[in-house]
Length: 266
Image (cartoon, rainbow, N blue to C red; front, side, top):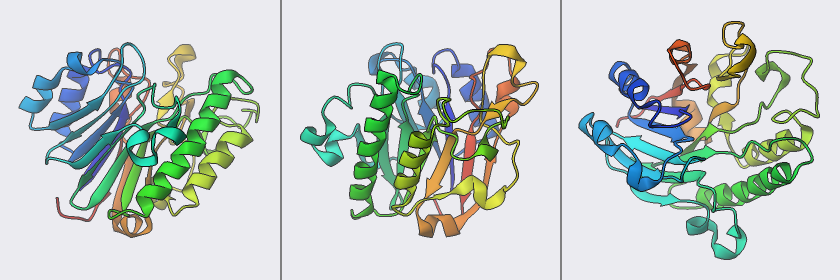
């Protein structure tokens, strides 16, 4: 089974890129972030014609997540509220950032974690609040009838210095601050492991490059798109790669797809 995660930075702008990539990489499940379109305007037909079932949660111009699956998914829900309840969710579902579904008794959790803007800002505080609720959300899922899952998406956090192109990045920089990293570490402590680091220990492997300053050509990137697996799935992982080819295409997303392969039947 192959599961891919890709922040496409607008599904309508990158529709042909997605279709071309899926033709070459017919993954079983594709998790998209930053679709940037309301559900009614999502370009469903081309992907359905390509053999995918679509599950979407979007909003106009911002955010948005989607699951594309070759087989129908079960127990699909969007947002935190369906799992943690309305009282705990508060206003954290107003931005469309979470969608989940089950395939072959494996739960896929697709996330678009808030960026946070700058350390100490209101958006930064919102990000930390969001991550705290995410931990509760995943703890509930871990105790459910489908305890094995893949949590993937754009986390907007480089967990270690090795995940950033430069050692000059400061702890005051967004996506690398101690509070963000600590929040993610607390989430992983419920029993999640980084699929990419199972196979690749060295640095200079990134999934996002700023559009500015020729960052991609110089490989001045960050690894902020991840697949985290529960222990049994981690054991079943046979590869996890970052496909940088689409980042070199004309008018690309600033992110590259990340693909994990599990030795499981589909």
